[in-house]
Length: 154
Image (cartoon, rainbow, N blue to C red; front, side):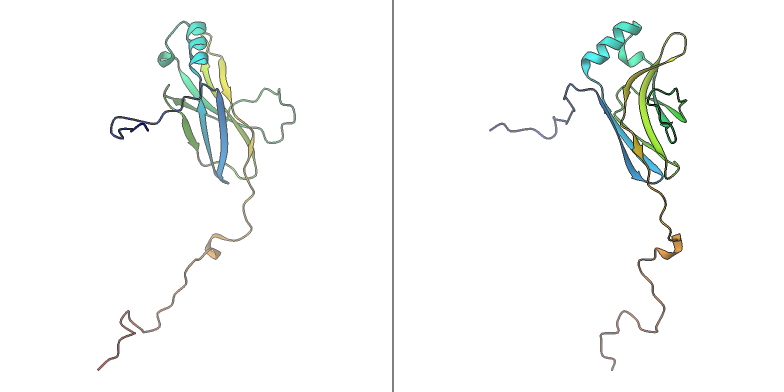
């Protein structure tokens, strides 16, 4: 049995896979995580003639609600610059009952987007019909008793 030294070890994703998964957290928030394989990183480095860490990487979020053509040219609704070692992100303040997907991109010398990964399509759910003030977990009115109510007073 191999003993692992917890102080000198760290967990890494070494699946050698290219994948991007978009997940719904709530009607207003999405979470995305991704992996870029060493081979794809090397291909991007050779194509753009620079180190992976020098590439300008962006995370784009697209609203695909009402778009029926999967090849439609949609502009990103949000773009965030990410570090080359980043592997997850949260998109907040989104609209409920919409369809979204994400892409990890870099830019060409002419400034065009070059997609490295694309996520799955995710739909945010509609809002519930209940008003926010109806979601009360604990209601209490002062009834005159204190925390020592179980003791007998003398």
